Amino acid sequence: MLQLSMRTLMAGTASMLLLIFVIATPASAKCISLPITVQGEIHDATDDLTVNVEVLSATKGDPVRDVRQESSVDHSHFRVNAWFNTTSNVIRNETCNRTPRLVIVRLTKGNQVLDQKQLKILTDFRQTKDGGFELIKPLALGAHAEK
Image (cartoon, rainbow, N blue to C red; front, top):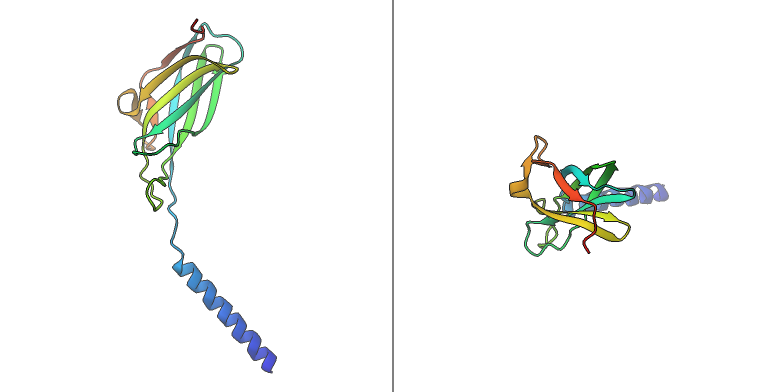
């Protein structure tokens, strides 16, 4: 009987400690990722071309430029879908206030950058119904390397 009471006491204590841990742990923010779509044409397109993007944040002191992205090049047409994470860790606490400011689009063949454009979120994009951004007019990239 003493063993049964001890087990009950231990189980009750463990449950109470778990409850205290769950209540005391601050909830982390569940931030969304904003979709950013860039599409356009490649002049003088050849095989093995890649288009990718970097996105700079409007948050001062934020060094993160990498975004999750899917890119496709079909003959001379390209499309990049990128997802900009709104989670900000610049200040001490995690918040969801990170916004995109600038999109850098690069056309590459292997390690060689053939063309690069900088696009401003405020002037070159329109906001979509889901809160993301799409390019107002198709972007033209050139596949000829600068000499």
